[in-house]
Structure formats: C-alpha cells, structure tokens
Image 1: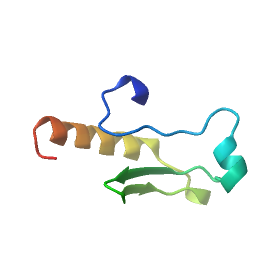
Image 2 (image 1 turned 30 degrees about the vertical axis):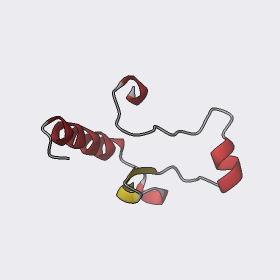
Image 3 (image 1 turned 90 degrees about the horizontal axis):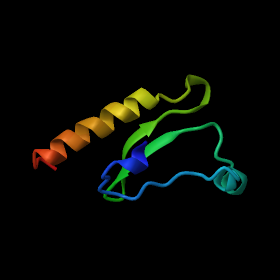
Image 4 (image 1 turned 90 degrees about the vertical axis):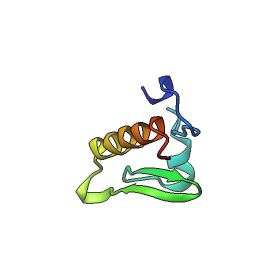
Length: 71
C-alpha cells in the first residue's frame, strides 16, 4: 500500500526470502521511520509488540504537513 503512494523517500522492506532477518537477526519485528538520517519514529518490538497504527498516523500527519508546505 505504501508503494502505491507518492512517498518523498525510499521504501525499504525485507523480501519474502527473509534476507534481512537471516543476515541481521531482525526479530522481533520493529518499524522505524528515518528522516534526514535520524530516527523520526522508533516503534517498539519485543514483548510490547509493534503498533502499525502509530506508523500510519505518523505518515498521514507528515503527508498532511508536507502538502501544506510545513515540511
């Protein structure tokens, strides 16, 4: 779904072959948003789980600010 949007940044995901997990032990799952070489959102993993709703809200807020010229 994100790939269908006009994102102002690269979209990076692990492929189905699970290469990032195999190479770096990317478990438990986490979601990060990087902006200008800084972590803008670090969604926790582990026993707390990760919250894709928080990621969605951040991205929508950023898109709105960007469309209004605030970013």
